[in-house]
Length: 133
Image (cartoon, one colour):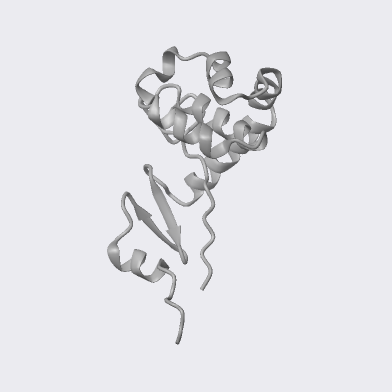
């Protein structure tokens, strides 16, 4: 059995997500776009971990400071965030809306959507099988 994990963005921020009706996670759209673009520059997981680890001060962290911390080319990052990165995040949001997502994290496993934590029964099925003797 093979498992493929694909990270998709669904920021709960009304500035880019039309399904969010009130101010909720301000600056989540910028963070998602920044992570997407960091990924295009080869540093997605580093950016993802950094942004989640600094979520409390995200609104005060400049893109320049984040790029410096993650050793990303600022000009390439900013160009991506205004273009293809933002487009990719918006595409993920529309996919999430079509799937009727209502929060994060959400997981799609074998066509079934799970909100929040994956149940133990699902996790057990995703565990690798021990080698046969």
